[in-house]
Every structure is written in C-alpha cells, then in structure tokens.
Image (tube, rainbow, N blue to C red; front, side):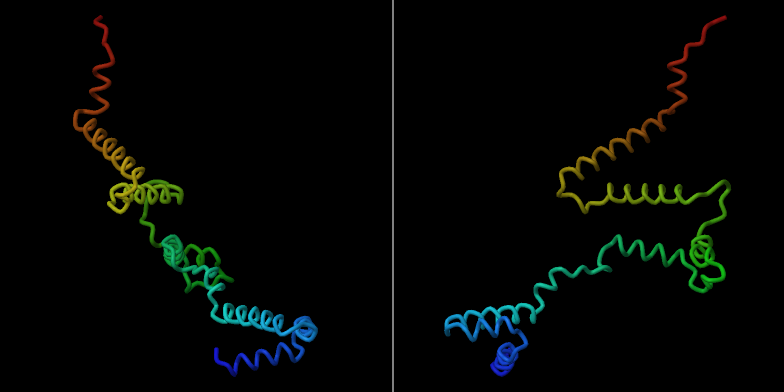
Length: 171
C-alpha cells in the first residue's frame, strides 16, 4: 500500500464516511489522531492482505473421502437420463449397470460391507501407519488372526474339531 492510497483512505475516514471516527479525531489531540490512524492502517492492511480470511476457508475438494463420494456419485448417476421423466434411472442408472448379474439376492448393504472389509484389510496390510503403536498392534493382531484361521483350515478345520469332540457310543 503506497502513501497516496493511505492519504485517500485517511481523507475518506475524515471526510465523513465514518462519523464516529471523525468526531473522535476532531475532538482529540494529535496523539489520538496517530493512534486512530495507526489502528485503521493496521485493520486495512490485515484485511486487505486477506490472511485472516484465508485461515477460515475450507477447501471442499481436497479430502480423500470427498473424492470417494464424488467417484461413487459419478459411477451411480446416469446424466443422460432426464430426472423429470425417470428419476430412478437418473439417480441409479449407472450403478445398476455396474453390478454383475447375481446368482442370489444382491443388496447395497452387502456391497458396502464388502467394500468396508476390503478397505480395512488394505489399511491393516499397509505400511503407511508404521509409526503408530496402535496401528502396529492392530496389524499384528490381524496377522495372527489370519494366519491362525489359515492354519485351522489347513489342519482340517471344523471336521477334525467335530471328530475329536463327539464321542460315538458303541451299540
């Protein structure tokens, strides 16, 4: 901000745009003039730079969750359909096309549950959270469960359990 801009700003303030400040300046000493002028200058400088406003701006499209929702909507909505004529086709057209023909009943909750399981397994297998003690423990626990489940299946699993625990009485 140059001296000419500051001078014009001062003339606007003194010229009656702000009557309260004008009264203060007319009835006070030079020291008060300087203090009021300095306060105005600081406020104008801070708000003109926009630093205070930029801190509170939230960018909507920068999160991974936002990207996932956008991707899901783009995969689901059929923009070629007219929503006034067939809203169901508009809202769910592409989603229906993306689902393979199932052998049995197929609902959205099952798909969401499977997606959740895949995401959880991806998180538990990733090395991204290696510095977190909690994630390291969760990954170790998951690995033990997976390996013991595979071991259980390789040793005969439930059939061996049934054979060992059911006693057949000789007749």
